[in-house]
Image (cartoon, rainbow, N blue to C red; front, side, top):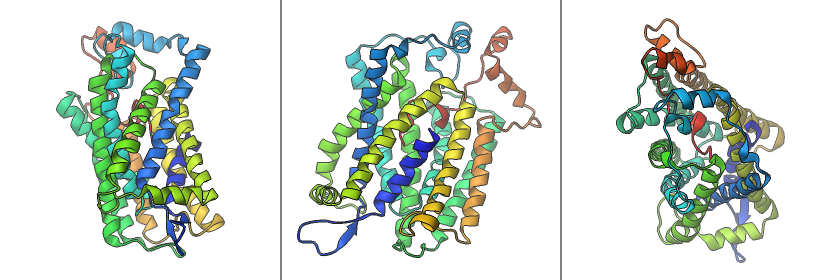
Length: 399
């Protein structure tokens, strides 16, 4: 998961930095800044998760017995549990296959909007900053969950959220002031700011998707890979046959598309085509391996892995710039220290938020012990608190 998760972001940024001719009469090459085409490739990778799903069904891998801990929670918790185990939270009524396919289309639209906004923003900002800005989803998911899902948050959650906000300011400030790396195309400062805004807005849409999935999919008994594959199916259909044709004619900054130009660039540049195909494959493998982590490990493990993923993206991009090709990757400047400070603060905030780092000095911190021992909480006559609805156990990790 860590390897493929790092690859998805690194390859996505590399694609935006690759050059190709745009037509038979073109004399010059242009950057492959095609966020819609890249979004379509991402959904194609997610769509392939359906193949993995049906393979697991065919081999009988979904017939594994449930872990004892999950059985205990389902048996004792009744209507309580964590967002990470929707089956443990409440009984589910079986839905038909057709209902499942149609219901998933709604969060798939949110996924489509969030992905497009994030991909457009990635054109103008570095991959490491892009990944760190995704921490904004923690803030938005907390607010939306309180408003629409009646979640309960503790003081340590709010401390973690506050640190995340501080980190986002530091990272965004470093991105706006960082100089262009030697050997790379300079970005318009206005585009950089616009890119930051788009990525943050994308996290709001992604957080909305979590709430919508929690509300709509609570009665859907379907394996995670099937959900990912169906969202990939709907996203691919909508992107290919609705949004791509529409934005051939809509001239919005960063949103417009020219599919004939994209097709020529791909068919006349083998390296570019192979990179896009590699991107599709790593999207598939990232989603598949992330589902394995989700099923086998805890939210704490997933949080630590996501933090390591952010660091790996930055390290890999630095390595590419200094050791492979200065036309790609990221370079180190004085403003990189601000980004590093933002990363440390972000990491600490996420760790506090997810109880990786505990603050025993807080007077109400002991209430979270019920989350670790739900049977004791029920014996005491109180429900275990709901775990915060953020990245560790989103139904589909996507990008």
